[in-house]
Length: 114
Length: 117
Image 1: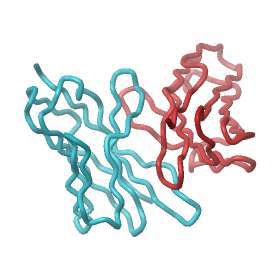
Image 2: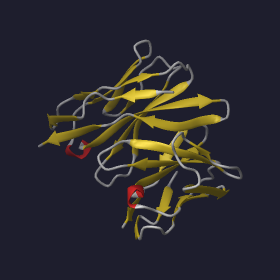
Image 3: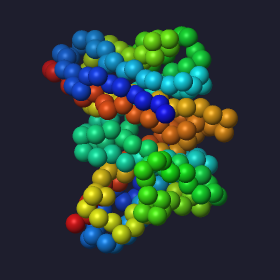
Image 4: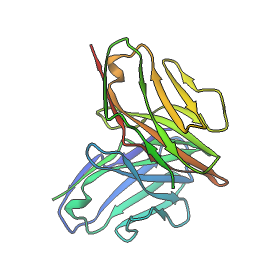
């Protein structure tokens, strides 16, 4: 159990376009999901906390107008990178909280902005 | 804010040996969890072991065990009888637990562990 999926697994887009990444909990309901970003050969950095039915909470330094998060149901959170630029190229990983403390991670989405 | 420090960027050991990865953290909070995650080349994050801060007993999961020293804010991972499949990046992570549930994870920079045949 506790499977988290992400779609797409990789995406290439042109500079200035928007890209949507989906994070789904397949066999459980998740009131809270988290979005992380990982640059090559670096660690994961928490971007935001996504709560079902309410606005996301962003970490300091993360532009909320650029990284739009929507958590419309108990099994789906989406991250939209708006007006993407090459510096937004990264590996984006979501996780879903099971119970009060355990997080399970999705497989990640590799974004390349040309 | 919490910080997590992993001082070993890379380690290499022979298969079947025991290896210990170090991690220290800094927090003024008392209610938290600590984790070790493994990230193989596929980049899928895999939970290796977790420790509740209020528990004095060190967590163990088969070949994996931790040495949790709360006063020293140290949380090392010991891998016994290392296997080739253990080759991966290992991240130490801190999670604050508040009344509404757990916050997001704060990760260390990671240790690249290489198991040599």
